[in-house]
Amino acid sequence: MNMKSGNIEQFEKFSSFCDLKEFNHHMERWFLELGHEFSKSEIVGLKRLIRYSAKIPGVCNAKIGTILKAIHTEYEGNGISRSTFKRMIIKAKELGIITVHETERKNGSQTSNLYIFNRFPTNEPPKEEKMNHPKEAFDLSKTKKENNNKRKDASLIVTQANNLDYTFTSDQVPQPFVELVKYFYPEARVIEEYWHMTKIAAYRNNREKESGQMLEVSIKSFKQLISKIKSGESVRKPVAYYYGILNHKFEELYFDELVEMGF
Image 1 (cartoon, rainbow, N blue to C red):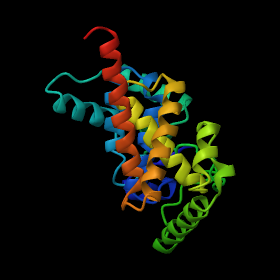
Image 2 (cartoon, rainbow, N blue to C red):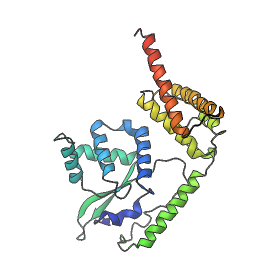
Image 3 (tube, rainbow, N blue to C red):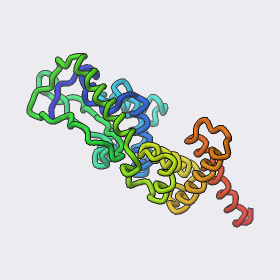
């Protein structure tokens, strides 16, 4: 699909995110799931591309040379090569993180690509395909009213997704965890958020590859959270409190292992 290059605002309709906060949340989930697929240099390129996609959340039309120059400046001359950046793009496309479209100048010559970040899949209701007219010329006369309608539609979809019950929970969340949490928080969105915090805590304590241990610690931590709430004590932010319990339990495991090793 060829499109005319120009100001980034003209590509606003291709954004899949309501705002920058939602975009960052989905990028964090992509990194947790697939970050290991990229080399350190490729991660540098991907993170810089994400930063260039902040003005229109999830959409970037910057030239590769511009992105590489910014990396080169930030790392004081120790940047990454063009081939590394292109290799990162190919991986990200194959993994479903981004979609890439060519853009062209008015004279028909090719210019910078349009990079569109995709939402992290969480069994959301299907969204309308945004690029379903490949033979039609790119419409630069899109009105502000149409953009506002797009945002309203996106907000409605997000609201509907937030009301889905536990049967819509992602398959990536272990079923025993779903069965426990659903009795207290039956919404799929909330269950996935608790498991997301589990993965963050495990990652930061180098436990993300020990799935059995992650599940065991998550269940114990959630039960401790519920016990705290039912005791009548005030818990202003249950998810944050749960995360604190997780970190504490992972740290206990670490020190127990040191003792077993004779330290």
